[in-house]
Picture 1 (spheres, one colour):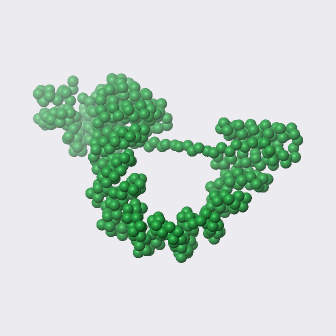
Picture 2: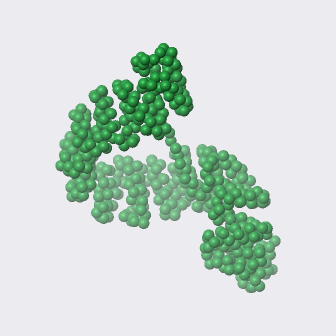
Picture 3: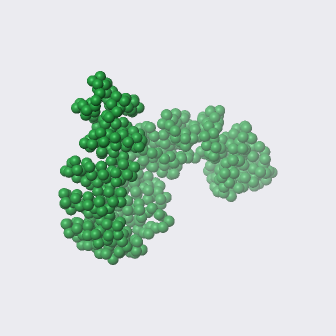
Length: 583
């Protein structure tokens, strides 16, 4: 008699990488001051130029080490070549060697102080190394050379602030404000500096200046409210939040701000009033609503809003933003949390109607189908997903599970072989592949291949109790190598002493070894741990009782097993003949 193999999928974390687009600066050696001013021979100049160009070529095709060698050779020809120093500095910086890069750039700037690119790269390196004052000084130099470039002045101010030189930072921001006019970015930066210095009057003056510049702009009142809230002045904070509502009654920002305010006050009625308005407001961005929903549900063991209220918010979210697929994803996760898997899967299907290229949704939907034991659904959906994402090994694993459950064993082996090249270094998923391969081969009566695959799983994962259990059970069914079966089954049971399936397997191995008394002990333990609802386990219990001479009790257990509907094909004959049958 065979146990039904329940597919198990390990949760596999998949990391996506992204690559940014790097700007390329093309240097030429035409009119190169390195060559014009250097006291070197014409031959050396020609060799320098040739070597420098070759270095640029090697760098452009990605051969960084060759480029380093060539630019270093340039410095041998002309030790005062700032251009070669710059190119070497860029390569060292890209490799993370900021010390070498900064030393080269510092020397290059001494040799050619007018080159802004040297200073910009060095400022960036100083900033990465948290040498904020040095970086600020470079931007100050750049600003003096180009007083129309406001970015230089802004970076100078920002870096002075990071360096803790607050007075100088304020002076720089004031210069910037004179040139650009009142700006919320500048005023907020100044307000934060003043607040960090404990200069409350000056901090408030900056925010008031914004309000005076545009009294109808709700954001400015919100900044003032947030300032008062950070200073624990709730009365004034509430005053400014309410001022926003006077100007803009449907302002989403203040609705959620007031929700947070009343949550801190434990005023559930007021908090609910404003969060409900916020979710109903169609002008509030969907992303804002979703983020707030995730925030209030982040600690389910410490809920602020009731279950009914959260349910209402989710429904409002779907009703007011049905055009955005993300709300269905949120709704699906909400339903999964409530155990409503079939409904959750339908929401995920809605997402795929308009976003079929979203791999994460496909994988989530297949996992939900696995929890629902809907293997026909997994079989159909995994095929579509593999067509879209042929390099995702989890999809092949899911399809293999479905094939095993639908008794498509040859197809399971084929799909595992097809997905194997994409496993790369994913050890957990390789273990799953080997486990499924073992099951499929056993069902195809390829016993040697099956047992080889089980050995591979246990070798990779010495604590894979499922593999040990199934391996032991198959050995016992074949009545071969029972000592190994007992060792494997015993390990699984010791690690999982309340798992009825593992207890049943171990008891059955003992049964095959004719140790009926000990088999009875473990089988009764399995029965006490939920095995009484499993026809195979109950039938096994009857078999053991029969071998111990208790025929009446054995027949009673066989009858119970027959009622479950998942006992062996021999169960009817056992009851009829009132004796144990193994074939």
